[in-house]
Length: 507
Image (cartoon, rainbow, N blue to C red; front, side, top):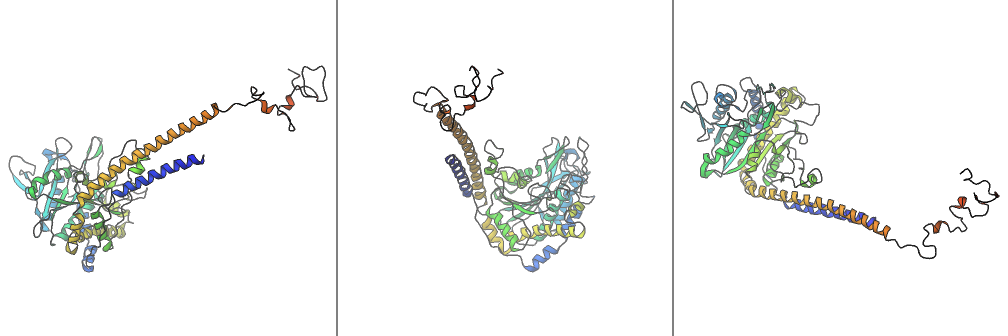
């Protein structure tokens, strides 16, 4: 038994060691020591109410009704998603940004999209969504590199909201879209404000995306059509100069924890952005350990899982299209990692894509009133400061170093994770099969021992009860029922004996 337990323990130990070794193959160890922003600048950014003011503006009556997928002949710049797009474009122009060249729509006198001439609105693009016959819009503005470009940094967030839309099941969403996704859009506007007068080595492109989610047949579908349309458009816009260095995605800000997610395995550029946050004393939480193939393989998977293991919050947003193309991404998000909700309190409202998604409910999660306002303001400002301080100033060279091998790292991580998932699945099933085989073999050996046991030798060998009938000083175990023993109970004897009546007498 001890040998069997030792053998099983040895197999499990070897499997764990092999899996850990495979996992370590894809580990990234790059570390950085960036400079913090000056105390004066940090105070200026963190004390501003601009991001919070934008958040309130996006929840106003004029801006909240911005459903991301409407009938193509109903898309109009005077209301809904069209009006919100024009308003965002105007904000970007106030900050000195210019429309991305070649991006525009044409509208008629009533403001509807037109293919027969009309007024050109630059900085806005339209596209077909996943719903046949419907369209969405993106807003694209940029800040060209100061002296020659090393590529493009894209800062994105979706600005569509399900407010005021009736689905076939008569479900009406009457939210401001504060958490999903006005807080992120507000932070983007504030980040643009901070970057407007700063020299950069990269083209900074701000993309406000539509059609992140659509409702049809009384269901909500995550399609991220705006991100997909952007990805398909950019190569033709930039031509030979197209070089996406990094996509920074802002999504679901204003929740419990603040994270930065880049990939299933840590990357050098993710480490770099966290190092900048630490240098500035910003309150970012470390991304929890990801569920990898090893843990999943011992769970419900029968075949090798995907390279990413299971889906988690870091993948369920607009960045997924860029990740699928191998483009480095960094997603800022604020939530409870385990549930994907705004916070871990089971009694709190899960407001995203519901009628409860309002700024007041966001504040309640932080205590409400001024306390809630200050907490949300601090979080939005932290993201803006982290982005600006990471890609400009004396940290610019370090940023360039951090992202220079990003694609290779991501490719290596993906290969390692897929190899790990396959290896752990194979190891798991090898252990299971090995244990089954061992059990069968051991059972077979026990049966063989029973069948092939050497029979007793000697004159009494034919009697299987020889040992029990030998008698001796201790007596026979069948002594009470021994008819041949003196004084015993012999039903066939002519008389009783001193031993008393026969117990079988009545039979």
